[in-house]
Length: 363
Image (cartoon, rainbow, N blue to C red):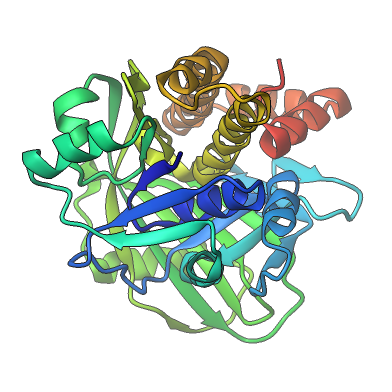
């Protein structure tokens, strides 16, 4: 009895390593033609989820930078933050380079006797039909796979009419444990520390402004008040959309990872949502495995029932935050800003937001 994971990506490597640790056999189906780009992409991982990853892969050696403090600014309060999240000098979350953590998990997956990595051209209908019959449970996290278009293509979607630009600043060395989010009139700009002399940036810009690359570079420099910049690495970009799948599965095929849901990057919660999903999925499979029950489409049904409503609430919560700050950007007076500031400074509310960002929705 084996579980099939489709796609050569971090989500599948983490899932496979965790299942293999529990002596569950896994086949990772890869398309050998598809290569993983060595981009400048970074991941923000909450403390709770980072501890989970360390527990799964105890020999993981990657450069992870702790964030102890988060400050929020807008165009109306440029010299003074109007929100701050500080957990008494504890590490709130960690910044890692995507390619580093992916390579670490891939390395251990290749060495694990319970994991097989098979090069298969799974895009043909004949091969997809074969896989569907061979495995009782197929977990698909590859967005280019035709399974999604054929079986799991209905979603609740929102287009933000924005493009996210990501890159890395090289700057003079400094104490660098504080993340900054600035809600500018162009869209939210985040500075996320990676080391004493490197900081990741994510700038989500509304399409209405029609800015070129040089103008974007200049805006990053304009809004930067913390770093003496030496260089900005080549900036990558992607369109901003959020969505939730209406159905998580079709019989024995389960959509997973970014295929289930996608959210605005302003809160850095995309991969954290995937890890929380992964924990639930692993517990369901583990319980069935230990009880000698079949690991089949019933896993998918239980997974969707456990998480669909929570993920919908969480993604809409992030969307609400985006809309709230977008409204604040348009209003000329400071009434909304002061209201947000007053609510955010409440100790109980502040603590609740930090707990949700770390562990997700717990009910």
